[in-house]
Amino acid sequence: EAGVTQFPSHSVIEKGQTVTLRCDPISGHDNLYWYRRVMGKEIKFLLHFVKESKQDESGMPNNRFLAERTGGTYSTLKVQPAELEDSGVYFCASSPTGLKLFFGSGTQLSVL
Amino acid sequence: RKEVEQDPGPFNVPEGATVAFNCTYSNSASQSFFWYRQDCRKEPKLLMSVYSSGNEDGRFTAQLNRASQYISLLIRDSKLSDSATYLCAVNMGPGGSYIPTFGRGTSLIVHP
Image 1 (spheres, rainbow over the protein chains, first blue to last red):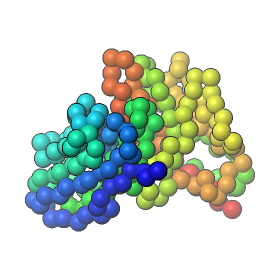
Image 2 (tube, rainbow over the protein chains, first blue to last red):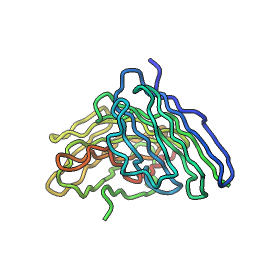
Image 3 (tube, rainbow over the protein chains, first blue to last red):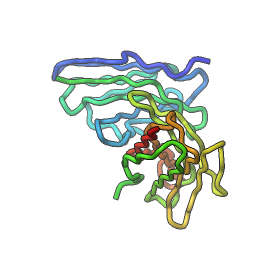
Image 4 (tube, chains in turn brown, red):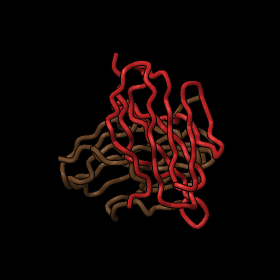
């Protein structure tokens, strides 16, 4: 069974540019989460989808971040325009029940 | 006060040692608890759930103390391969978000 896949694995962009991260959850997992880890800090929640609906986006830092989940399958997280403080590792996780999470390998985003 | 707190360590122990980590949580309505393991530059992976009565998986024992609002992870007979960061995750209960919330992680280094 394929795990959670994320693309790209690394992205280096300049401040002001746009970046789109993609996550393909495990097939059949209705719950999809985005988290971000900034160096030296905890993994912080960004938002939660159940199928195609946003259940909780309380962790989204500001309106420069836009997440979508087309048809309840894969999800994208767009940052526009990117700022220096957006740098970090963005993890996607999926879950059948909302309890145990299965993580993707993350996207390392560097904003210069 | 942070929702989930862990001593970041590092815990530096010799092979064969027993080591224990604690994780405290602030929301008394929390219902589900987990330990994840994260290797350097990798994604977190579920290690074990934590049940009210305590549970064991090989050399790993997890316990929950609801009165004091903490969970613990005990590793017996440490192996070099146990070196990693151990993250606790707490799912808040009714009246709050069911979003898995992570601690900062405790770093374990097992040396020969």
